[in-house]
Image (tube, rainbow, N blue to C red; front, side):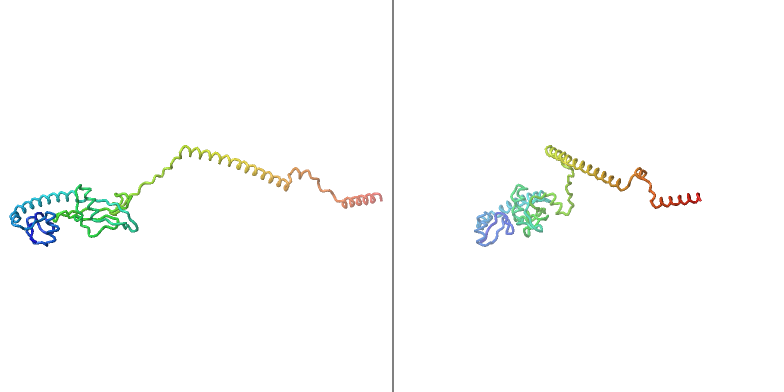
Length: 256
């Protein structure tokens, strides 16, 4: 079927072009969408005005797209996902997901086909994605996929290979609550009360052991006074008899 294009159709024709297309494509898509009309005599008479109007719309669209590209250039999109072993995702991040996030950022509908993503993202990390907003305009953006519950800034630093400073640990000892402090104080007093009798008992036992030791030493080693009071050795009976006999013999010799 020969048709006159009223608007630009990407990859097919521009507004004002006259082309032969398949009947099904014309009847089921181009004509119902008001993108083209059959190339009748009246339609052919309007080709010039259609082409001019399309050119004006094309310029306006290109201007808007370039402004959007400048606003989106360098944009970072954070996507929070569940992950498992080896940073693998439970699911994937598709161009439709990214288009939805871009629509929220720009407050305008973004077609998923403008997000050039060779294959869905299936792992955590930082990725560079290209947006083809127009056949003549492309813009790069960044996509950070991080695990649920993580801090995006920390995840971004890790993805870039930067050193992440650990949070300082508070080493200060927490003061116990008043009730706990009272209980600990009472427990300490009880412990001291239990320990004191044991210390006294130990002291008494040591004194008894020292006294017993002194008594044993006293028995084993007699004092000097006791030694001085002991009687001298007595002469034996045999020695006294010999002395008497000698005295008698001396008396006899004197008499003779």
